[in-house]
Length: 420
Image (spheres, one colour):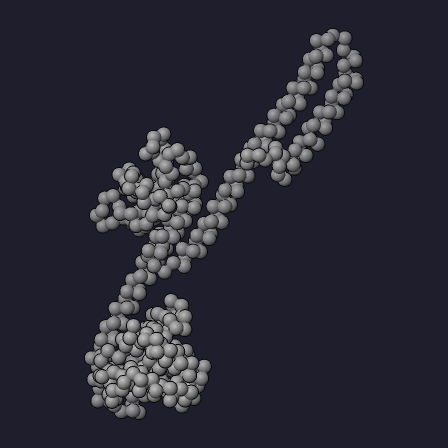
């Protein structure tokens, strides 16, 4: 019970006391009245009178004691239920958060932060099994003084995950009374065929021991974290594959095109700056970047002898979108590549759509593509100075290009941010 609260301060106490009063106190009062009026007058011996009075008093005391014991047990049970409900709610929230992590480091940081709160500890650590590392290296820590605490107690703290990984079971360490003593709770992160790491919560002395229910909660968190770590690692590998394969294709495209060396990279750089000007979020920026890099990927399907054939060249946007659309990792890029040669007035290709029906990312790529084609020395066109290229974009705003995108592009140029 919180300090300063009254004995019957909450609803449960009032209900319990009301039940006790009606079920025990009232009958006891009635019994006392009956004894005083009818039983005591019939007794001639003083000892018998005192014995009967003592029996009634003892019954009252026993009843009150039973009530207080019952109240204490009830409050402890409810406190335990409240704690369990709080941990369950926390685990549900943690599960949702871990399910959304995108990176391996994000998963490790999230796991230790949640362990900190779930175990009500000032420091939490995540140790990941290394190839041959003994003890396993620490991957993440949470808590204001977690790093200092680990430095001071490193040999003993590092021994805990090693023991957990060897036994594959949770470990509870009781705290001693010395300055460098601590209580610890460690659980393995399940993996196949062996645990992939250990989650450790630490309470420096003097500290309360960890309760069994905290072990269960931390074990559940460890299972959720293991799945999140696996997913984060897969996503990181996927992004790594995505970036490197894209780089290979861009290099192959540069080698295939005689007149556009480095064009994809330059268009992507310009598109990135416009995307930031439009306050694109991280996902939109990534999509725009890779779409700009690969906007001419369809040219790989065209014979080099046909690169200057206008009619044949116009097929590359549609071909490129089909190439990207058939690959799951790149399917979001396909519409951008498909429409990057549409005109604002509807006279472009391949579909002849106009205005805002053209995806904004496609309109951005179109402006960046045209600017680089005009200013690049490797272009098939006569090279123009940046101001001349900007003037050409201005002349075509409202017909070929989105006026707002051209205006944003000029603003970046005037601020000197195109080459930043």
